[in-house]
Length: 281
Image (tube, rainbow, N blue to C red; front, side, top):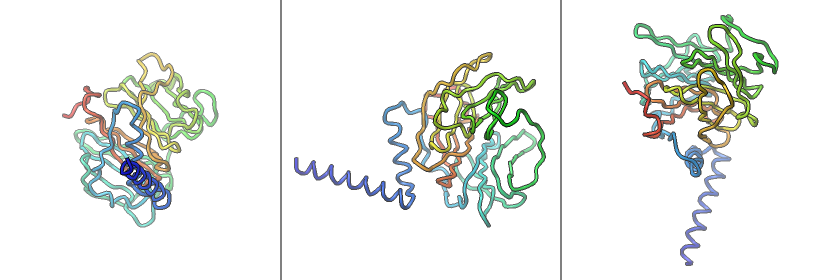
């Protein structure tokens, strides 16, 4: 019995050291440990790919955004900082390919849109002059008004989903007419959404919440109805990881999260058996 109590005391002391080291030194060990603990009371739908990327030392700035080119199997990461490469290119398996530092000043968002004949990468650069190509709404709290619109995506039904972060909601519009279709706010009473994407099968909405260091898996509504937000599962990250923007692989359903607090991008892969409609071709 004495040995048991000594063992428990030793384990408690070790955990306390981890907490203190994380608080004062930013230990990545505790970040992974906190992620594992967050799943203890819920069914696991995604798991952290601890080996992605295989060379994390290429993250030398603040990682603001990430985009997946599923057609080419590439992951683009944009980071901020002085005298560093602003865009990093990895394979979906985590191998570093190349980087560049020209034409980009202060990246905020990134989107990859490739075809069989052309690769295209679009970057929102808040440090350079830009042209507004399309604009909907104005600042405010009512329908079709915004306060820090932070991320946008389109579903297979032609609905545009906007993460209206400052108003703590997601607003939905018709892609062709611009008609306001509804909004979700019941899931975001604590913190507004900073990023929104769909899983490849269209059944789930993936939402990042920056200051809560949390990623939500939300049931997507059927066509013709927006309804209320219904959270299916949660990935709770460690404090101050700060997930800013995320993207989802159209082939594997893997979630890539740009974390401005941890200054890294992490990959979460679906647990086998939960998402049978994801294709790997």
